[in-house]
Image 1 (cartoon, rainbow, N blue to C red):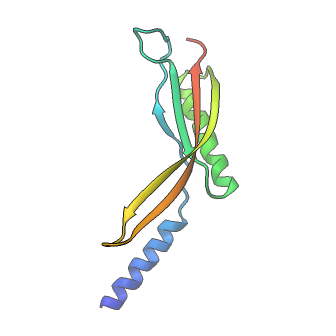
Image 2: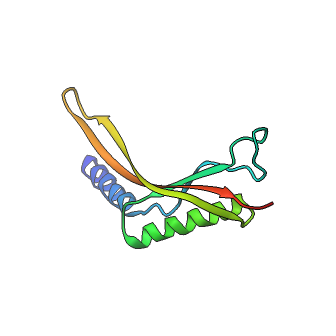
Image 3: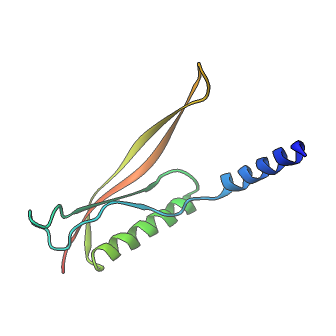
Amino acid sequence: MLKISVLTLGAASMILAGCAITTSEMLANPSLTGGPSQGANVGVIRYLAQGSPADIQLRQQDANVKMSNACQDKYRVISTSVNNQLSISGAGRWRADAQTTNYIYIRFVCTGP
């Protein structure tokens, strides 16, 4: 019984590892009107910059759709940058695992009502 459970868990992790994340993440929504009383008018979105070129392109398309929806189809990209995120996890008393993940960050503003 234990052997079957281990094989099932191994197969499940291989399936999950094969799944690609093809979405972006809105970190800051821009305001449509801007100005100090309305809050910041700069939006920030990011997506994973690793994986196959097709997956990266799908993430970029998802980011474009989210920026367009946030600004009622009228936006302008201010800057694009690649940043690294370091994750460290404990793997025992004397061992830690570190992993670097690359993200593309896009700063944008809405350009019209």
